[in-house]
Image 1 (cartoon, one colour):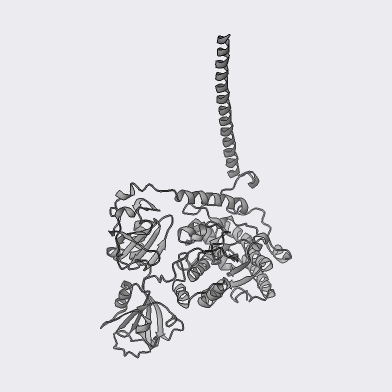
Image 2 (cartoon, helix red, strand yellow; image 1 turned 120 degrees about the vertical axis):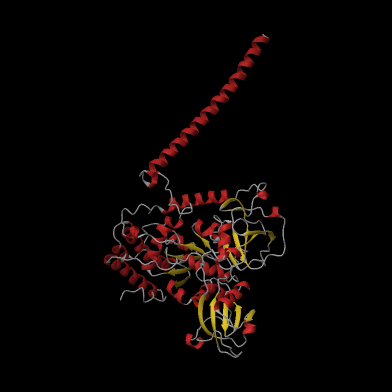
Length: 574
């Protein structure tokens, strides 16, 4: 009896193990089958399956990050009552291949950006960083690891960020181009330039942050700078920012009180004065006869209201009395850094403000101006890695966090507009906006589309789809926006300080005059295309012009109907 019971117990144990094994095998097989079917659906979607059956893959920017503005709807919703616009827009049932569904693409975009951002933040293996070679691959002389205070930086002549592609060589070249002696790197992605070596040295192992764009190289650490001497690179480095003539101005009553540094030199030249002021880390070089002064644009010397250049003719190498009325002003390669520090809001904003514009209307430029004027980051409805990498740190923040002073958006639907308490509505000439956005889609933020792109079928399809969006965007915000400040791109460009003051006051911020003048001295930012690339043909056909001009008249009438100033004269066809 005992033997039979023992055999039964042994059999049950084996059966229990066998059942467990079969259950696990069944679950694994089911998982593999599910993954295989999912992959098949995605592949079918990429071959032409309708959008509802497969996930859409967003367009990829040059740096490998998804392009957020490609997620915009090619057929914007026109507000009710705008039958005129609906009649003007040609029927577009099928757009170009890069025009895709906004909502599904935004979801894919955010997932992709989030995973890439998380992967960038993974803790580094610091054990091997201590033994890295600092000078093997770089021309500059490595000076050592130094302590750095974020509130009062030692190297503060110029500041650059590249949160994905920073390398030691990139930082050295950027500082050499601007005639600095030292280049310092921190946090693996931040570059600082200056002409004075930091005082407090740190232990070599404290500089342990790997460069974001160069594995195996050290780019400082937390409050630590890896410092290189780059003076020997000056001769070889291309000068991207030369000494710029700013004009002839009436001299302030007391130049010594107005400007922190000065030099009296017989046979003074522009090069002598500029080099002296660059060494002293000042952006302005002011010449009056044999006197050289260095400083910043301030309320006492704002560089507004320049005088006739003839009043300054023959001033160099002349013994000018202390009471000379006029002076020559030049801008040195040194960056004005009085307004470069930015941060997130310490408490959540009570008013949710949008910075709304049609793509290509200068939204990134406006964000640059607002951030440097207020000292606070702006946010974005999209996650644009290219902007984040260049220092727009609000890109990584959720757009509804309320830690940013305003939020960039190109949306124009009723629901998307009514989420905001107020908005700055930025409007640009549709001809210029369409060309700027077309350039960005095919060549990124700083490039230009090729002649082949302009002459392809993509361009007329783009105009037909996007021209109506330019109009409906403004009309929707005029209809559903709760509190609006309308800013025209052309007015902002022509009268920067008054318009920027208006924007800052709308954001309920107070800004000093010196900070506004600093912004004006750094007005372009890092996303200005170099010059206007001339095309040897007219990209707009007469049919396109007729369509766009009718949209312009419709928007102009709507603005005036809401008691706003109409569109600038250069928009309106004459």
